[in-house]
Image 1: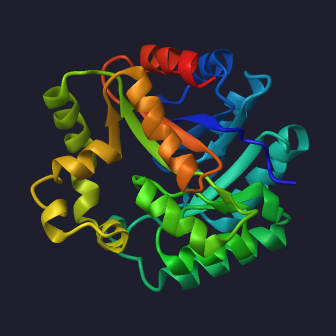
Image 2: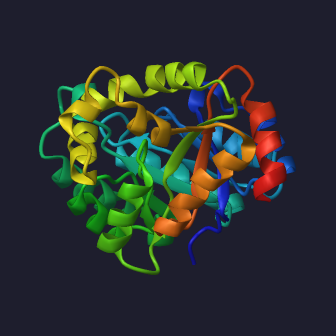
Image 3: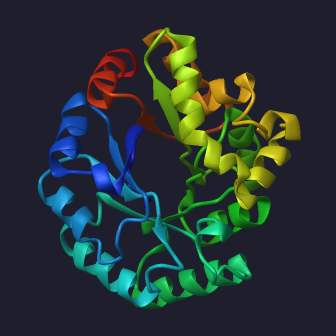
Length: 273
């Protein structure tokens, strides 16, 4: 059975992921703690966080296949699974081609990497795949518990659900910023999203969603930016999160931007719990 990550999780980079932050997320009622930014394949960070929390599921979002050997990652998973199998979801992916000179035939890499994890004894229900395009989404449904798309909109969520079908976990990441200062919010969100709009795999994905080249230029159109980073009152942000569920998501990993992510997550928890 797939690790139960519930409905809402907290998504943060490995550099900011601490046991204290995970404990806070757990106390606020969030049901998953996502650790992005290519956490090390020894998974020691994940193990420390699991040891210091009681209920919250912990997921990697994601371990990079080009950076960490599948055998090492598989062994690390098994070490953690001895005590935390019901709370740990191993997210893996190939990232983007601009990140490594080795990036060639990415789907071959995905299949071989997943095969090695299979051989090491990592169960299908214990893994999730970073997936944007149709082929990666199909593989996520066939070989893992499901898909974890990063920096997408409900348009992608709807397309992804159509591809992977029902009964497969779909857990997109979503940025938020609780502020009614539209100019400030767009500036922060655009600063965060700008680099992704030009990266090959993300750029193609946005075009598949139906965005135009104009939408992707100069840091992104306001319409796109407003979806990549939900902002406004807590109720407006909650409605934006619900749009993913209406489009077919099972779970949303929330990344709070700005100077006070913990306060924002606490405020939001009071509305979505």
